[in-house]
Length: 200
Image (tube, one colour):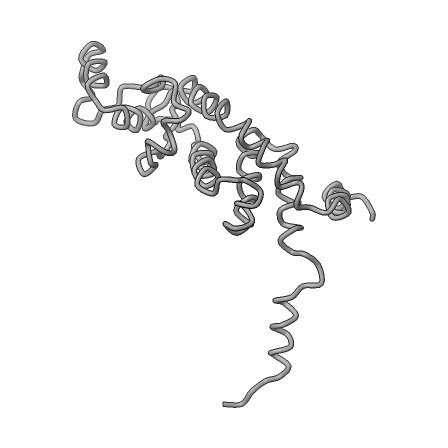
């Protein structure tokens, strides 16, 4: 097989950039998180943390499992969009929580068994309020939570997000502060100016 020394040199160039690419990626996520929505800040900070390997996270006393858990929940919440039915029913949100680890991802911040939602129970959709309330109360915490999240009212969705953020935000701020220690101040200043459109 014919070797191509030039290709090898090109590969080496891309594998060893002249700047710390990981540091710049971490820095860009932290800067993007400043003016983002609360959920956006969570996502940017957790993405920045996930750029570090497990050993480096341990050195910073950052729990990798907690990072992944917070990121996963925030991503599900951020992905939810209001759905407008074809009839005159009000809008509702669908949050996909079925595959979350309830004990690890949900239970630490959950304040109530389930959040305000509409009675959309499939073959049980004709249950009256009393029967429906009994149906939900007899369900396991995970079953009731997942079921309600298929048809959250706007108030229910906002309460769900609010309770999650109350739990996640202090942890995210702490993690962001630790990540900031890994970034050279000059790199931060340079990227901040670039992202503001300023000349360096």
